Figure 1 (cartoon, one colour):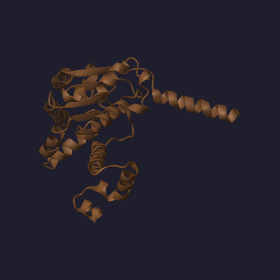
Figure 2 (figure 1 turned 90 degrees about the horizontal axis):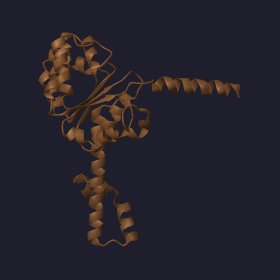
Figure 3 (figure 1 turned 135 degrees about the horizontal axis):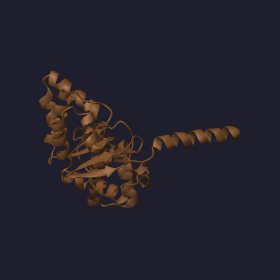
Figure 4 (figure 1 turned 120 degrees about the vertical axis):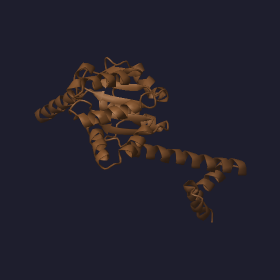
Length: 250
Protein backbone atom coordinates (compact mmCIF):
# COMPACT_ATOMS: atom_id res chain seq x y z
CA UNK A 1 0.00 0.00 0.00
CA UNK A 2 2.87 2.37 0.75
CA UNK A 3 4.26 1.86 -2.75
CA UNK A 4 0.81 2.41 -4.27
CA UNK A 5 0.27 5.63 -2.33
CA UNK A 6 3.79 6.79 -3.23
CA UNK A 7 3.03 6.26 -6.92
CA UNK A 8 -0.26 8.19 -6.68
CA UNK A 9 1.46 11.06 -4.83
CA UNK A 10 4.41 10.98 -7.26
CA UNK A 11 6.94 10.29 -4.53
CA UNK A 12 9.33 7.91 -6.36
CA UNK A 13 11.74 7.62 -3.42
CA UNK A 14 9.05 5.94 -1.32
CA UNK A 15 8.68 3.17 -3.89
CA UNK A 16 12.00 1.94 -2.49
CA UNK A 17 10.43 1.72 0.95
CA UNK A 18 11.95 -1.69 1.78
CA UNK A 19 15.45 -0.26 1.66
CA UNK A 20 14.45 2.78 3.73
CA UNK A 21 12.66 0.70 6.38
CA UNK A 22 15.57 -1.74 6.67
CA UNK A 23 18.05 1.08 7.17
CA UNK A 24 15.74 2.76 9.71
CA UNK A 25 15.52 -0.48 11.69
CA UNK A 26 19.30 -0.94 11.62
CA UNK A 27 19.89 2.64 12.75
CA UNK A 28 17.14 2.51 15.37
CA UNK A 29 15.35 5.60 14.02
CA UNK A 30 12.24 6.89 15.74
CA UNK A 31 9.12 7.92 13.82
CA UNK A 32 10.14 11.57 13.53
CA UNK A 33 13.70 10.76 12.39
CA UNK A 34 12.36 8.17 9.93
CA UNK A 35 9.94 10.68 8.37
CA UNK A 36 12.72 13.26 8.15
CA UNK A 37 14.97 10.73 6.37
CA UNK A 38 12.24 9.85 3.87
CA UNK A 39 11.51 13.47 3.03
CA UNK A 40 15.19 14.33 2.76
CA UNK A 41 15.75 11.51 0.29
CA UNK A 42 12.79 12.67 -1.79
CA UNK A 43 14.12 16.23 -1.92
CA UNK A 44 17.62 15.08 -2.90
CA UNK A 45 16.21 12.84 -5.63
CA UNK A 46 14.08 15.64 -7.05
CA UNK A 47 17.00 18.07 -7.06
CA UNK A 48 19.15 15.50 -8.87
CA UNK A 49 16.40 14.88 -11.43
CA UNK A 50 15.98 18.62 -12.00
CA UNK A 51 19.71 19.04 -12.54
CA UNK A 52 19.76 16.22 -15.10
CA UNK A 53 16.78 17.85 -16.83
CA UNK A 54 18.52 21.25 -16.97
CA UNK A 55 21.67 19.69 -18.41
CA UNK A 56 19.64 17.80 -21.01
CA UNK A 57 17.70 20.94 -21.99
CA UNK A 58 20.97 22.91 -22.32
CA UNK A 59 21.92 20.66 -25.27
CA UNK A 60 25.64 20.52 -24.58
CA UNK A 61 27.35 18.81 -27.53
CA UNK A 62 30.07 17.18 -25.43
CA UNK A 63 30.32 15.64 -21.96
CA UNK A 64 32.81 18.16 -20.58
CA UNK A 65 33.23 19.63 -17.10
CA UNK A 66 35.56 21.89 -15.16
CA UNK A 67 36.87 18.81 -13.36
CA UNK A 68 38.27 17.41 -16.62
CA UNK A 69 39.77 20.73 -17.75
CA UNK A 70 43.50 21.33 -17.22
CA UNK A 71 43.03 24.88 -15.97
CA UNK A 72 46.73 25.40 -15.33
CA UNK A 73 47.32 25.23 -19.10
CA UNK A 74 44.98 28.13 -19.83
CA UNK A 75 47.79 30.68 -19.47
CA UNK A 76 47.46 33.70 -19.64
CA UNK A 77 44.03 33.24 -17.98
CA UNK A 78 44.44 33.26 -14.20
CA UNK A 79 43.09 30.19 -12.43
CA UNK A 80 41.45 32.40 -9.81
CA UNK A 81 39.31 34.02 -12.52
CA UNK A 82 38.02 30.61 -13.67
CA UNK A 83 36.98 29.63 -10.16
CA UNK A 84 35.43 33.03 -9.61
CA UNK A 85 33.28 32.47 -12.69
CA UNK A 86 32.48 28.97 -11.43
CA UNK A 87 30.70 30.46 -8.40
CA UNK A 88 27.92 31.67 -10.73
CA UNK A 89 27.98 35.24 -9.43
CA UNK A 90 28.46 36.58 -12.97
CA UNK A 91 25.12 35.03 -13.97
CA UNK A 92 23.37 36.54 -10.96
CA UNK A 93 24.71 39.96 -12.01
CA UNK A 94 23.85 39.48 -15.69
CA UNK A 95 27.49 39.77 -16.79
CA UNK A 96 29.06 38.23 -19.89
CA UNK A 97 32.14 36.12 -20.57
CA UNK A 98 33.98 36.46 -23.88
CA UNK A 99 36.74 33.94 -24.62
CA UNK A 100 39.12 34.95 -27.39
CA UNK A 101 41.77 32.53 -28.61
CA UNK A 102 43.01 30.45 -31.50
CA UNK A 103 41.52 26.97 -32.14
CA UNK A 104 42.30 24.09 -29.80
CA UNK A 105 42.76 26.20 -26.68
CA UNK A 106 39.90 24.72 -24.64
CA UNK A 107 37.39 27.53 -25.12
CA UNK A 108 34.47 25.21 -25.84
CA UNK A 109 35.49 22.90 -22.98
CA UNK A 110 35.57 25.81 -20.55
CA UNK A 111 32.26 27.18 -21.82
CA UNK A 112 30.55 23.80 -21.40
CA UNK A 113 32.17 23.29 -18.00
CA UNK A 114 30.87 26.63 -16.76
CA UNK A 115 27.48 25.93 -18.32
CA UNK A 116 27.14 22.58 -16.56
CA UNK A 117 28.19 24.18 -13.29
CA UNK A 118 25.46 26.82 -13.74
CA UNK A 119 22.92 24.05 -14.36
CA UNK A 120 23.92 22.65 -11.00
CA UNK A 121 23.07 25.99 -9.38
CA UNK A 122 19.59 25.92 -10.87
CA UNK A 123 20.13 28.35 -13.75
CA UNK A 124 18.49 27.86 -17.15
CA UNK A 125 21.24 27.39 -19.75
CA UNK A 126 21.25 26.78 -23.51
CA UNK A 127 24.24 26.01 -25.75
CA UNK A 128 24.38 26.99 -29.42
CA UNK A 129 27.04 27.34 -32.04
CA UNK A 130 26.72 30.80 -33.58
CA UNK A 131 25.90 29.30 -36.97
CA UNK A 132 23.17 27.06 -35.56
CA UNK A 133 21.47 29.87 -33.70
CA UNK A 134 21.62 32.16 -36.75
CA UNK A 135 20.02 29.44 -38.88
CA UNK A 136 17.29 28.71 -36.34
CA UNK A 137 16.44 32.41 -36.06
CA UNK A 138 16.05 32.75 -39.84
CA UNK A 139 13.96 29.56 -40.04
CA UNK A 140 11.76 30.76 -37.18
CA UNK A 141 11.23 34.08 -38.96
CA UNK A 142 10.14 32.29 -42.12
CA UNK A 143 7.80 30.04 -40.12
CA UNK A 144 6.35 33.02 -38.18
CA UNK A 145 7.58 31.59 -34.86
CA UNK A 146 10.41 34.06 -34.28
CA UNK A 147 8.75 35.76 -31.30
CA UNK A 148 8.33 32.38 -29.58
CA UNK A 149 12.02 31.51 -30.08
CA UNK A 150 13.19 34.96 -28.98
CA UNK A 151 11.03 34.73 -25.86
CA UNK A 152 12.54 31.36 -24.94
CA UNK A 153 16.04 32.79 -25.39
CA UNK A 154 15.20 35.84 -23.27
CA UNK A 155 14.08 33.56 -20.43
CA UNK A 156 17.48 31.86 -20.24
CA UNK A 157 19.80 32.78 -17.39
CA UNK A 158 22.81 31.93 -19.55
CA UNK A 159 23.14 31.70 -23.32
CA UNK A 160 26.34 30.07 -24.61
CA UNK A 161 27.30 31.07 -28.15
CA UNK A 162 30.18 28.93 -29.39
CA UNK A 163 32.40 29.40 -32.46
CA UNK A 164 31.59 33.00 -33.30
CA UNK A 165 34.44 32.79 -35.77
CA UNK A 166 34.15 30.50 -38.71
CA UNK A 167 31.06 31.56 -40.64
CA UNK A 168 30.14 34.91 -42.16
CA UNK A 169 26.55 35.93 -41.55
CA UNK A 170 24.09 37.42 -43.99
CA UNK A 171 22.64 40.79 -43.05
CA UNK A 172 19.41 39.05 -41.98
CA UNK A 173 21.27 36.61 -39.71
CA UNK A 174 23.45 39.39 -38.28
CA UNK A 175 20.44 41.56 -37.47
CA UNK A 176 18.60 38.68 -35.78
CA UNK A 177 21.64 37.74 -33.69
CA UNK A 178 22.14 41.38 -32.76
CA UNK A 179 18.54 41.61 -31.59
CA UNK A 180 18.82 38.48 -29.43
CA UNK A 181 22.07 39.62 -27.81
CA UNK A 182 20.77 43.18 -27.33
CA UNK A 183 17.64 41.89 -25.59
CA UNK A 184 19.85 40.01 -23.14
CA UNK A 185 21.91 43.11 -22.32
CA UNK A 186 21.96 43.37 -18.50
CA UNK A 187 19.01 40.94 -18.32
CA UNK A 188 20.84 37.67 -18.80
CA UNK A 189 24.38 36.45 -19.27
CA UNK A 190 26.14 35.35 -22.45
CA UNK A 191 29.28 33.26 -22.91
CA UNK A 192 30.87 33.72 -26.33
CA UNK A 193 33.84 31.82 -27.72
CA UNK A 194 35.67 33.22 -30.74
CA UNK A 195 39.08 33.14 -32.43
CA UNK A 196 38.73 36.70 -33.70
CA UNK A 197 39.74 39.87 -31.88
CA UNK A 198 37.00 42.47 -31.72
CA UNK A 199 38.42 44.55 -34.58
CA UNK A 200 38.02 41.51 -36.86
CA UNK A 201 34.35 40.91 -36.07
CA UNK A 202 33.51 42.95 -39.17
CA UNK A 203 34.75 39.90 -41.12
CA UNK A 204 31.67 37.95 -40.02
CA UNK A 205 29.11 40.73 -39.54
CA UNK A 206 28.47 42.71 -42.75
CA UNK A 207 27.45 45.99 -41.07
CA UNK A 208 30.28 47.96 -39.45
CA UNK A 209 27.99 50.13 -37.32
CA UNK A 210 26.02 47.09 -36.18
CA UNK A 211 29.22 45.29 -35.23
CA UNK A 212 30.52 48.25 -33.21
CA UNK A 213 27.22 48.51 -31.32
CA UNK A 214 27.19 44.77 -30.63
CA UNK A 215 30.75 44.75 -29.27
CA UNK A 216 29.98 47.79 -27.11
CA UNK A 217 26.96 46.12 -25.51
CA UNK A 218 28.63 42.76 -25.00
CA UNK A 219 31.77 44.17 -23.38
CA UNK A 220 30.04 46.75 -21.18
CA UNK A 221 29.90 44.31 -18.27
CA UNK A 222 32.06 41.37 -19.24
CA UNK A 223 34.99 39.15 -18.38
CA UNK A 224 37.25 39.08 -21.44
CA UNK A 225 39.56 36.06 -21.40
CA UNK A 226 42.65 36.02 -23.61
CA UNK A 227 43.09 32.32 -24.41
CA UNK A 228 45.61 32.49 -27.22
CA UNK A 229 48.44 29.97 -27.24
CA UNK A 230 49.46 26.60 -28.63
CA UNK A 231 46.72 24.14 -29.55
CA UNK A 232 45.99 21.42 -26.98
CA UNK A 233 44.46 19.17 -29.61
CA UNK A 234 47.57 19.44 -31.79
CA UNK A 235 49.79 18.62 -28.80
CA UNK A 236 47.61 15.63 -27.93
CA UNK A 237 47.79 14.29 -31.50
CA UNK A 238 51.57 14.71 -31.58
CA UNK A 239 51.92 12.98 -28.21
CA UNK A 240 49.76 10.06 -29.38
CA UNK A 241 51.79 9.73 -32.57
CA UNK A 242 54.99 9.77 -30.52
CA UNK A 243 53.63 7.12 -28.15
CA UNK A 244 52.60 5.01 -31.16
CA UNK A 245 56.09 5.17 -32.66
CA UNK A 246 57.68 4.29 -29.33
CA UNK A 247 55.29 1.37 -28.93
CA UNK A 248 56.22 0.02 -32.37
CA UNK A 249 59.92 0.34 -31.56
CA UNK A 250 59.43 -1.66 -28.38
